[in-house]
Image (tube, helix red, strand yellow):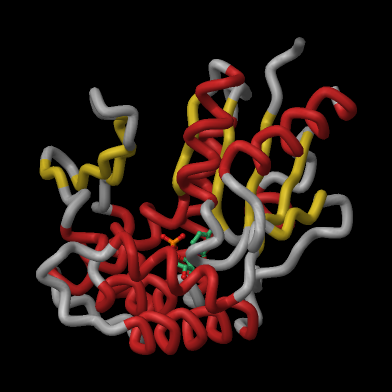
Amino acid sequence: MKSLVITIDGPAGAGKTTISRQLADRMGYRYVDTGALYRGVALCASRAGVDRGNEQELNTFLEGLNLSLVRGGDGCLRLYAGEQDITAEIRTPAISMAASAVAALPAVRSWLLGVQRRLGAEKGVVFEGRDMGSVVFPEADVKFFLTADLRVRAERRYEELPPDSSQKLEDVLMDMQRRDAQDSGRDLAPLVASKDATIIDASALTIDEVLVQMMDCIREKS
Ligand code: C5P
């Protein structure tokens, strides 16, 4: 089978990261979590005190930013800013919201467009995000849109919270709803299923069931 570019887009908590990793393993591919890159930009910009409203300041900051995704021994991706591992720091509720805010900025999207396209140049990659099939790789070989009911997604995210988290299920649900609205309602690269994407509603499916549907679809299309 030739090497493919596979995209998986969808809202937060639909299971994209787990599915992308397992799909990539089955295919012998790399996988790229593009949400982690947006989170990395948000964290580093906030640490550097960048004024997001000042385009020149933002562009200068982005020119000096060096984000890289490296697969760790456990199979999960780790995000580095230069030499610094920022994997844990990008997974807070505050950075989720900040990532969604910086993701609406044209300068950030255009900088990450270049980063993401370079990562896809070699093919044999599963990309997960919001606009992978619609904007970044419109020519991708196979496109999926993975979704699930809001409550199911919120419950899954709630289960993943560290034991010392003070967030309640309703907080997670409301954050998710706000982020969905922000990601779907923005002018630039909003979260939408591209017309040629296969839509999978994972509300009542196990990870294995989703993977079976995806592998069937990949076989048909390649
Ligand atoms: O997937 P994750 O929840 O880590 O993404 C964080 C945020 O990054 C999303 O809420 C979204 O605003 C943004 N994002 C995006 N385009 C992508 C991936 C993520 O706008 N391709």
